[in-house]
Image (tube, rainbow, N blue to C red; front, side, top):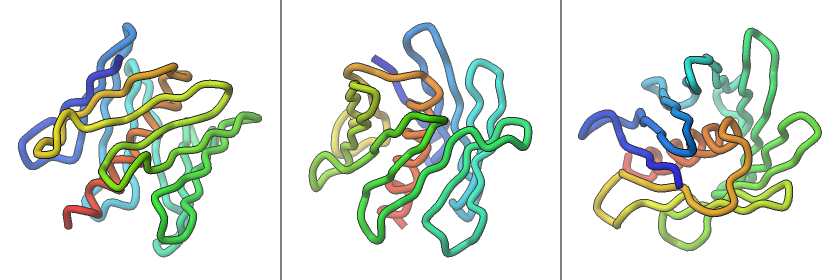
Length: 145
């Protein structure tokens, strides 16, 4: 299990801890780009065009993963090297699932009135989970604005 705690009462930046690893998510003010710091390794998350539905996860200018959102849905197709993952809404609520590589994880708020969350299930690589959680946070933030 990975515990996801917001950095402050009004913050959309999170700290993730679990499985002996830690991460920090950062969402830039407009909410279209940001960063992911996993075990002190820095990744940049960029949206090449403002109105696109496409994000890139970069490490030292190299694109290591991409995410494409399908229309107005809450569904992303994540390409990580040769691997393919799907992040989508589990229900009408805020819960999301991450599937790929024969594994399935669930990102779920601890209860309806908090931004604290947990990630459980058969978890893929921590970097993929961190990127998926960053994308989930974007959806949660948009829903609250």
